[in-house]
Length: 324
Image (cartoon, rainbow, N blue to C red; front, side, top):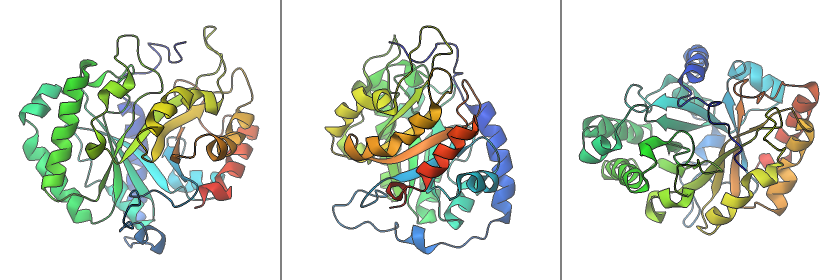
């Protein structure tokens, strides 16, 4: 069953991202630029250990679309380890961002989602963006800290980056990756994150996989859309990720849920949230990070959509599984 309605999600999240980044720029200006001991421990992984992957449990991440970082962390009762932000590939400086600088200073790991809006992937492959990409790679290397880059996520979904052409997508991904490696930006952790379901006109998600040597973490974006549309069914956290998890697990890499949330309509959002940690423990052990998309957008994704949802989220966030 198709879970995402065709018109519900715009091609770009730029409108939502712009508001959030604007708020965060203020927070960034006030941040003290100093590396925390917690984050410093993640700068050099042990041999054979996937970069940024916790030795046990999983990292909790957040997209701050429902208030400032300080306001949201107060609601949650803790500071999430990963901060999801969105940038335009051609228009934004997605490396030297004051938001990421503030994240590093406060011990957060940036998850930099790069959206190639109105970009012809043939131009990426042909080198039209190489001068910009070399600058981004040099700036990434200069940071000296590990962080995630999630380029062109949900390529198999309605976003349709690259025109649902897996060969072109893979070539563009590899081209960008190779520039970063050649420039010595090996602190970048590459997260490849398809949608949990394929769009009707898209090849299967795994057809877009760039290759083991080009991906550090695999990932999935997926939501419980509830029953506000009569054609939809309530889905548990487990069922949202069941199909694609099995395929990604075969790669043996850590998996990040780079976007997830639940609506309220059709079931108990609080119970949905409460089921996340038990499901990770028993069913999805390779999921090493979960990022909540905290915003009132196509559905009531925000953690404050009800008092019961917020209470469940606060309890989940304090579970030792998310405090590795």
